[in-house]
Image 1 (cartoon, rainbow, N blue to C red):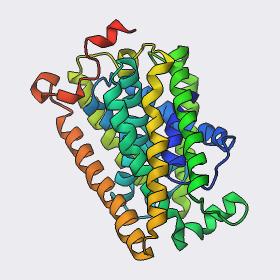
Image 2 (cartoon, helix red, strand yellow; image 1 turned 90 degrees about the horizontal axis):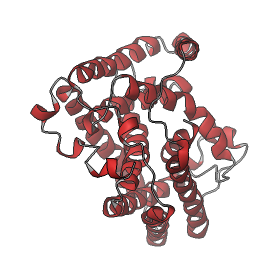
Image 3 (tube, rainbow, N blue to C red; image 1 turned 120 degrees about the vertical axis):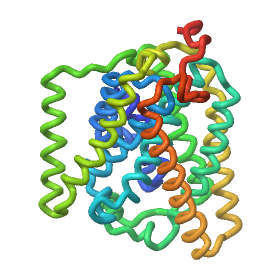
Image 4 (tube, helix red, strand yellow; image 1 turned 180 degrees about the horizontal axis):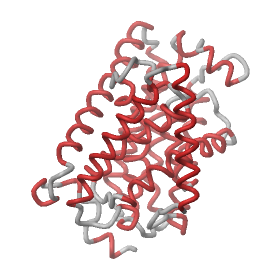
Length: 333
């Protein structure tokens, strides 16, 4: 579970901010993300989520847990406004969990180096582009980040960003290698006391946020309830074991080579934007707000579509790319 949290943390934190550049800082990130990842893994196992559309039903949950429990940011848009839940569901859920954790895991297990390479290139371009937005005054001057960092924030130049991208891409690859060497869990069923403690702590934190933000608890319950409703409908027609069982397998270390494209493209993209010296208005309007808008729209469409398909049988839904366990999976487990 901690290894999975380390992978999710790379996508959710290290691809979002580069202020904390020490690999040791990632230990704390992993511990912070671990309870949220544990909750999502249990939902996947509990509702036998074994397809991509089912996985997209779970994706918003991790965004809600990270940004609605660990922090209250998801509520800052106003009562029941879906913008932050959808955007964070797309970043934490789709990018970090669906792609970086389960997608990469699947491509490694079935030896699909073409898709892994394509994903690494696309994610690298995204990472390098988004990271250039950190030079905006509102980013480098963020008082909360400055307080957390313990001093002024330092904008990485291209050479520094290259080292940063290499470091955390290596952590990503190492974590996946560990999953392929016995750390993967084919099932995840916490003990009853663990579930009770998790629920009490989570509920207590949400109630505490509600003291300052009155709609926090109702909003959390409604959005989480919506996803659970979808998962219950999904479970009634599920025909496969959970993706945890389906992707239980090993792979050789050399299969990780396509991930090398991730830091290469990310650093190259970052250096290109740096050299162009894009005007601040373009960075804010096109690169930052444009990225957020695209993520939110795509995430919203995916989540709504997943909810609509939740009650259909896999055959009727024509899952296509949702088939996460082709015959060759069993050949390598």
